[in-house]
Figure (cartoon, helix red, strand yellow):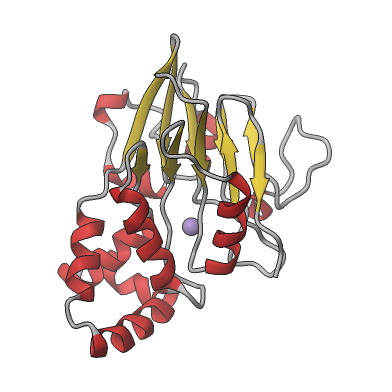
Length: 234
Ligand SMILES: [Mn+2]
């Protein structure tokens, strides 16, 4: 692949102002760059559907990979299945998104169907090679005891400590999902800015910098150079 930058954006959670802030800073060029979104566009924020619509637009562009997060999964299951994930959507910030959907659908009754179809078609991971180095992008992580081909939806969308503590694969894995302020002290990392991306010693990069928290940010990383851009705090 011959891209100038491979840009990856972590959790957004309805923070459209922060999203605009970081997206303006990266100055994405669809002809030269590649852009990967790690999921969780909705829930907990005040402009969830604007963020979802933005992800839908990015998905239509060349040189982009838009992935599904566990929050999109919960929304999908809430409307389509009525199983466990559906009961936990509203208390996990889905109440905000649902209120917006109810409002929007008064003017645009087709919106919900379009949104669900979009989410249904989102992939759970994206994999690339740069030279002989393999990179895997997904929302949460990988089951450390399974090969890549045996990975399951549950791990790709929900896994946390079991992945961070036990992953020993050769591929670099770039994920969102656990806000970096919630990671606490990390062995081997002396002092850290809790709203900054974290790279663990076992080839895991965490890009969810707590967008929905008052001091939280949305982060973007170019995995080729390691450069990081963050949203301003509002
Ligand atoms: Mn999230």
